Image 1 (spheres, rainbow over the protein chains, first blue to last red):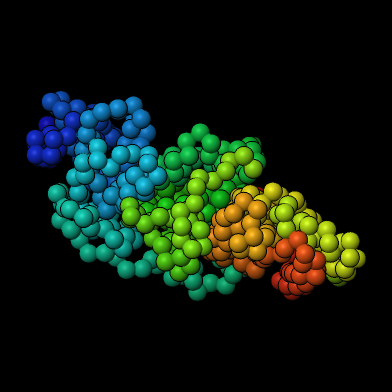
Image 2 (cartoon, rainbow over the protein chains, first blue to last red; image 1 turned 60 degrees about the vertical axis):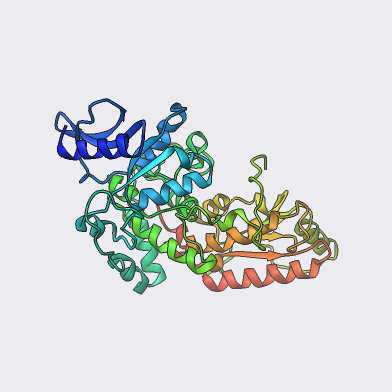
Length: 267
Length: 139
């Protein structure tokens, strides 16, 4: 157990009364997410590897019926948890957040504009980065150039579904439309523009800009830039930004702002 | 060069716009023959995926027609559409496809003339925009 592991174990199990701790740890030279129960050896915890632990939490949550789960949360994880709690995928009361401030390189890499968690337990808070170089370049381009740019980027896609699997707010599990033949022809690689546009649309009211899709993408498509551009549009059209538990997505309310029931899947 | 004849999909809601289109037909109102009407139960059942797939597949324009706000057969169906379509337009815009290729409008069952007007206007607009650039892209 390294010092960080000891510190986190004390913080989670003794001070905050958690029953499980979800963190990244090193085993045999590899860093992977691990769930540790109270009393177990925490091991060599690593925090420098950026990974959305919320995705792991979301996958194992249905199998853990009781007990509190402590999880290392960056600012983006916090927002993702709010989005999940809002849609009742997780119970907020059973989650204990251990705030982690991102390092400067990580902020730089995500072009993050909101990097500091509400409560910092580990790490030093650093300032946000303003603006994204690529989106500024795209804004200056003509429409034809922009289409050529994105088509060129999306042609690199090999449909590995890495962006959907690692996304913390991509939670339709078995009935993802992107896995249906209706929208993406089965043998087609690259999958075409509709795949990426449908995904962009699905993310528009929940993307918390963690950048995991971009990190996971083996073809290095600048997916995060697209998410950031659309988040800006969302703010412009509906003055809504995801990541707050109290606000409801404008797509689920009527034009007067009243809450609508669930969408009908029959038609 | 032959004149550009756009292919346009028109999603019409069963209760208002389709009846409006019917009325326009019965009244023999003249309009361009470029539109392919697809009858849906409600404008809210036009999933954004359908629109995005159509446009990325090379359709020149998509017209989504529903009942006027407040007249929806399913009470708040068209509220959903009214919220979704501007966002779909933004998705198209960011990728680099003209957002005017998608248009949302309200046509009631008694507005055959409005149906004619909307279709004529939209076809004219798409003719000005030219063919969908996605037609040329080979994946």
